[in-house]
Image (cartoon, rainbow over all chains, first blue to last red; front, side):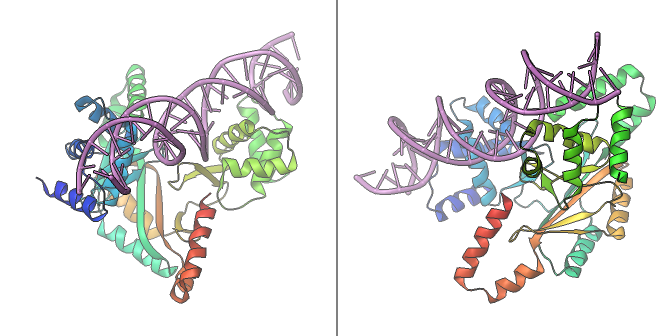
Length: 164
Length: 164
DNA sequence: TTGATTGCAAAGCATTTGCATGCTA
DNA sequence: TAGCATGCAAATGCTTTGCAATCAA
């Protein structure tokens, strides 16, 4: 039993909830991934393991995982929620490549410090923050430089597909 | 004719589009507001002036205003888009009070500089960024300190209402 | 004239909810 | 056994699209 599973079961017990096969499966699938899955993404993955699980249950469990501190909701602005691992994962921010959809995670203590300073200036008690930097990643910039028209076409399609 | 109206009409002409009474009205209503309206908010305001305007038109015009550089789309993470003035409005970031829904706009050159430095570190070509700081504003912190249980109740309701 | 624009209704997404049935504790 | 959990279908909220009618250039 992993630490995450223990955290989850403890949360479930504390809340007077019940442990079910679905919840265990959804947690396992979530833990086996990395990156930022949408509810739909996770549902598809769970479905591969057990097609009888409903997507409602996936959404409900995702909320449970968030409450238990195992998942963190991230919104990239496309109108749907994405989830990343939260347990023993430090806070970080994201750079999102608008060409290929790649997400770079980074952390800057200076950035955090200045945010804290700005909050203090406005007597604002900071709970959380989200920084999203959109642009073009190194790989895509390289390709762009050497790209012919047809290659550009391909990349546009790829970007659209990854946004899905 | 305001500068914004001129910008809009020039944009419309350049794109081979047509000027209509609805578009003019929607622009005027948008210009008369401040803050961050959702599509629905703007639709309601337009409706007060002319109930015959459809919300489809409002959404379409909002996109047009964005393309013309007059509006800027901001997403606060509640799943819907908000729009703020963009023409001759400097870039800024937002602090959002989770108690009363108030939005504080601020700008920090240091913050921008560090973001640029982080982007450079990852050879990431920055296009735009969004920083959202969530917490409790000075007013709500003050109230909280002196708050009785019943007042807390009231504030929770207010926060929920403002989120609407 | 002609193609852009409009408003309506309907469709789309992502997500949530109502509810009867099923299953843990 | 009690009441939480499940899955389905339907509902939701925001936004977009199809389409026939209308209108600006």
